[in-house]
Amino acid sequence: MKFESTFPFTEKRISALKPSDSSKTYTDQKLPNLKLLVTANGTKTFYVRFKFNNKAYNEKLGRAGITSLDDARSRVIEYINFVRGSEATKKPCDYSNASPKFKTLHDVFKAYRDNELCHRKTIAGRTHALEVSYECHIKKKIGHMPIEDLTKKFTRDFFWKLESLGYAVHNRCLSSVKSAFNYVLEYEDDSGISSNPFGRIKKLPDVKRNRYLTHEEAKLLLKALDLEENQDVADIYRTALFTGARLSNVKSMQWHEIDLRSGVWVIPASNTKTRNHYEIPLHDYVLNILKKRADFSVNEKFVFSSKVSKYGYITGGDPIWKSAIQRAGLYHENPNIRPRPHDLRRTFATWQVQSGADISVVSKALCHTSLKHTMVYAHTNVDQVRDSVNKAFKLFS
Image (tube, rainbow, N blue to C red; front, top):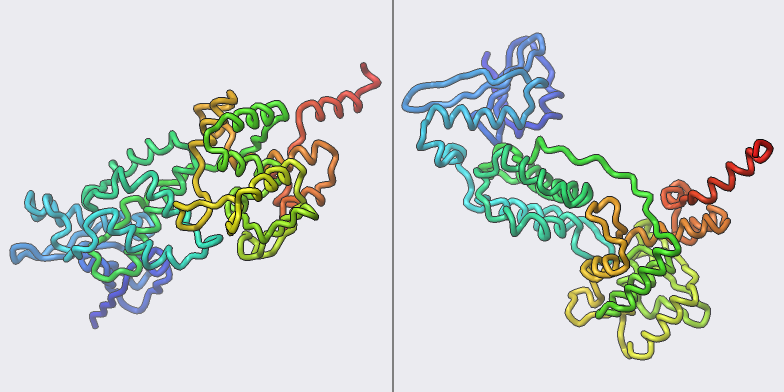
């Protein structure tokens, strides 16, 4: 008895299919011309089946497990286009009843943003990092491109160029578009999209950063910030250095969180990654900044308020940071070497460790829930290591 079942193919569901007494054929709901034959002995093979000019075609594509699902879907498209000739090559998606709403890459990302990404919580309701990466590095360059033009070679070349911006930008951008296509393939019926054009591109390996500012570098940076035109943003970076707080928390700091008399900043649980509230003792340097800002921040909700930001506080600031580190002589063409704003947090922790502070105290200052998180930021300098080695081998000197 012939058996046929239709469902959206995924690698996981294909792997979970069990053999039965006779061969069974399954149809991909997203690409009906793609079939999977599962024999009684458990062999799973992809086939392409379709009719053209009253002729039936049934061609083997490859074994499941050896041939990936994305590969199988791509081969279906290539084979049908080959058979149908040049007219199909011009419109490779005609056979799959492509929906007009998914003509370009931006159409795909918009569906993902509006139906999936918008439900992911972010601190203080800020734009999700994947959307920021897409808007900054992808939308203007290739967002307008028709989906059928996003070939494997094109997408690979595009992300090769993004590598020059560093692994972090590359990987976030890749996650944004790869996740968008995965969403459409999984949840949008009759999308007309049969495979993820970014599916085979791999993320770059993380670079384990241990960059922090020396005292001399910090002095140069502070002097450079004094010369910046936008002193509001400069104050954000100064505050980040002397509190060790995440830049997002500094930017969204509110006046009701600050007790200038006791010198304590209470970050509410709603604004922290761990959803716990934290109390940060403020250095005199920061207290002076806040007192000066308080003098002209009458009836303002945020310490670093902004009339043009939809959040009510200053966002961005990268151009000021770049200008300051260039002025301070700290800029490097390699993005994995030059200082980043988050390195201010690492600097805050490292200086405390180098001064002899207990790691548990540093952990509390960083608002960490685990010491292992603090160890990522804590580094000893070369002089400390040299002194330790000299003392250990003092008898031989």
